[in-house]
Image 1 (spheres, rainbow, N blue to C red):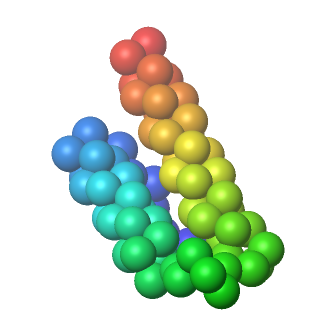
Image 2 (tube, rainbow, N blue to C red):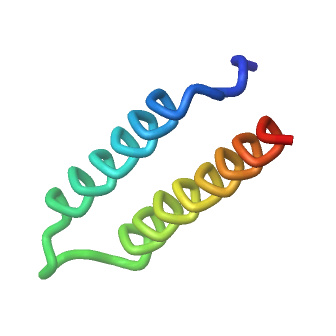
Length: 65
């Protein structure tokens, strides 16, 4: 397991990279042939980004104390 990202710039870059992956997956989906697995994958990416944002916020809040 890697070390937690505590640098705010690295956190933002990580989130940007994850969102870029989301955009790439979204662009690759053909609306005419998309199935439930495609939609589930998009939802999972967004859930992962949201979870990571919460982790980063918690880390940043705890370093202020």
